[in-house]
Length: 76
Image 1: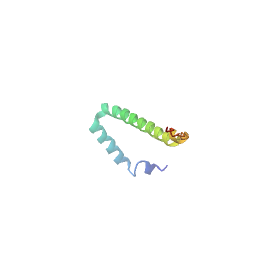
Image 2: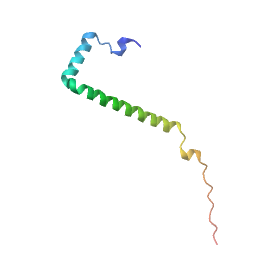
Image 3: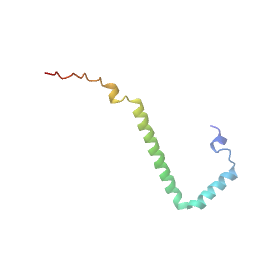
Image 4: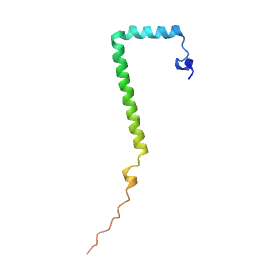
């Protein structure tokens, strides 16, 4: 992967400026907490995607069962 694409074409000075602004806005104490919560969010998203793929790939119960033959009651 091209390094420039990874950083969206930002230079060194722009990256340093973004990091400093991030530190000023959130503070050094809140950044680890923010990253932890972001990691939990990504993990939850991936688990949800796995569940959706599992539901898509497994056949539904109604598709696997044969329809029951219904008999009409005899009238007297």
